[in-house]
Length: 219
Image (tube, rainbow, N blue to C red; front, side):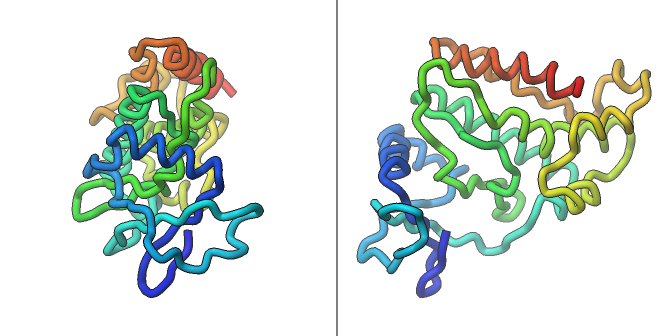
């Protein structure tokens, strides 16, 4: 990402351009939940921004106000988590996937979450697992569970660790009884819903989500 003349731009490598073209062909860029993005005419200087050659430059619609997950309310983080999973499911329908799962890829326009990292979309490879699931747990699921079940604000935790809350730290904050309680306010988000998608690559992603949930919560 870089700024030029008041505009917000992103430099793409050759592989990144191929992923973006697949995203553009899917029609997902027309989704209002994704930041407005277009190929830049009259490419601004992007020399040295990437290790290799810059294949293309994108221009993004500016976000009027930038906020961070450790500044958000419980409902804002939950809305961002829903957006992350909904876009992942939409991407899978077009043989695409989100390669990470960070709330720092989300900003708010008023009360509406908007996904700003179009570079996170990439083509789905056969048999590939969703590598972003662990990150989803640490930055979305565990902070929401901590506040929902224990009444402990997640904001100081995320401010102190940009990587989120590890399963070990969450388990240390939970009593034996907590592990059998149902989270309030719909906080118990689960990427298992990804597993409802069919197809070889999609089932691989869903299976990864199911397996990772156990591993992620037991470490």
